[in-house]
Length: 273
Image 1 (cartoon, rainbow, N blue to C red):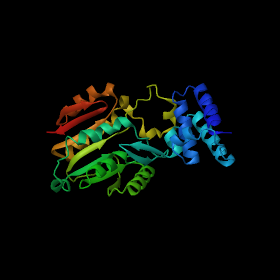
Image 2 (image 1 turned 90 degrees about the vertical axis):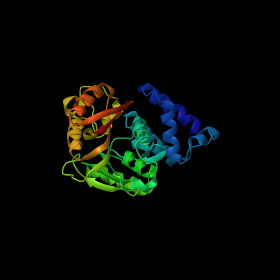
Image 3 (image 1 turned 135 degrees about the vertical axis):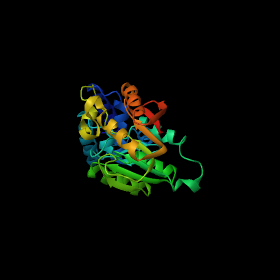
Image 4 (image 1 turned 30 degrees about the vertical axis):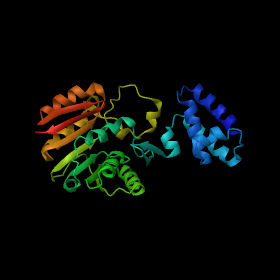
């Protein structure tokens, strides 16, 4: 079977299951399998696929037809211009979360001489995409990645090694037990309410990285309470959530000595009074 024939077949099967990105997914699967860029597929569309490669591509196609996310099939996902290793141990990085890095540009001082004294903690780090990206953008920052899952921390450790980010790791439940003053807290915690409609792909991601009680707000509220105790005066708190939750989060944070500075898409930014 030629590249063009396999792509046509795969696109048709993916489309029949209601996957809107059928052609793109087919190309990603095949390019990853034959270890060539997608542009190669277009330039060599009549080339025959080796039989062993086709078997692997077919197996990966079946995984996608069962709604396994592409990031888990190919084993990586791009975030802020870098490739992060992905496994079912952690939530797949989303482009919406990149807004946290953009907001940090308004917060982190320009002077390198002061950055080493700034401690940033990424709570519920998962793949490590947020904390590692922050460290790579501002190498002098003191960055700690925390998660309740050791499997997630192992994955974050691999990503830090692969990308050359020197960060600290801590298995912990939110900020529990921490006492050292912190300058910046960033967090993409589980915030999905189980009654919400979610995509079939999401069913393949870890439940404990997605869902939270009390309308999805339980862990965010816990973090706000803890952050009010250890975040420095004038310190920064950036939280990802669903837009329908942001009003409740702002109201709750104001009761815990936080000033709402900005909301940008899914990210709410507070300063500790």
